Length: 337
Image 1 (tube, one colour):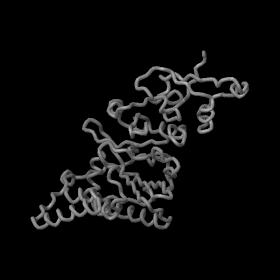
Image 2 (tube, one colour):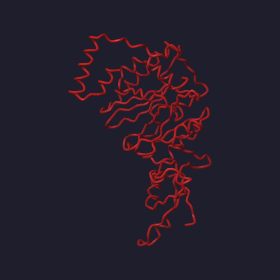
Image 3 (cartoon, helix red, strand yellow):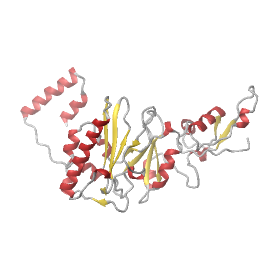
Image 4 (cartoon, helix red, strand yellow):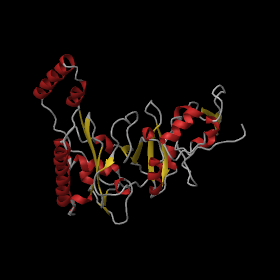
């Protein structure tokens, strides 16, 4: 076949497993016309003419379209997107002001990474078939990279679908407590309208994201320590619904209009407050945003009080019962720590 059809793909197409079936392979990829038509139906950005195939006789074998593998890892238009399969490679190509995006790559929970300008992210998401919109924004903590971040929350209550009234009650509580902490410890006024609110509640869980605009912190480590000190009462109040894992080093925060891998049947993360797509980006820091400092002494975790021998004996009995009677190793681990 002489013609090569270049598909403007984000490496998040129905052929992803095929495209990456062999690492570092330069071989071309073959796909049949049924797959091409399915791709056209999924996404208007993919425009492949299969009219010639429709005009063929039924008994003729389906034609194949050759996609050069070297193009399959790039995005559309003049601003091609390079994906990396090691996060350190993305860190090496990061420059101040850009945003690092991660995406679910395969069913083994591996991820791929790219470095984008903020105005390239929305086209990336909306030019990707819905079931493959598994994009996350990375909050990076590195000694060699300056990576400021906004304050954000990930609320997730499994097994319950709250009413709109109940969800609003939860949002008001989080917003009011955050505003009070910012006033007390940073002497700044935070308004309710500064909070970006996103919702992906489904029949099996209540899920919401919040992002505060107008203020930011040095990096995700400072944000984690803020959650461990001044905002700890709020975290404890909603434990385990407020997910602390999103404040870990090099954490991944699901992006607007995206879903988790293999969960595309559930609602996508939707914007429900009066904000823009860029407002919802946790690492896009506008010029007007104010940097808030968490004093160094507050970054240190308070020392735990040493348990007495009597207390340790009681804890050992509880741990033994949790493990043997209830097979609850998680609670047992928490008691041991």
